[in-house]
Length: 78
Image (cartoon, rainbow, N blue to C red):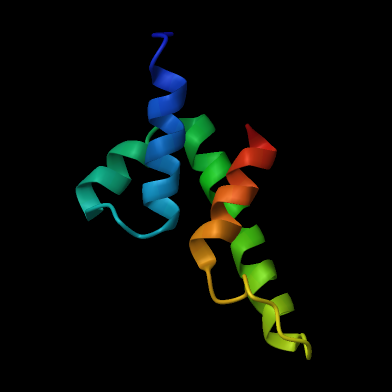
């Protein structure tokens, strides 16, 4: 594995979750089984976080800042 491949994969993961990839880029990225598995695990967490935020009554300053949530999730898995 190349030294830059893991940071590149993490960067691509962030782009994929943020819906910043073209369809062909996403297909290429998801062709890697490890990336595909992690992508769908993170998307499930993203949905769970969204549903938890929707049911909360108190005001959370980070609630509307989806990118901070995803960055936090990616840091947990790295």
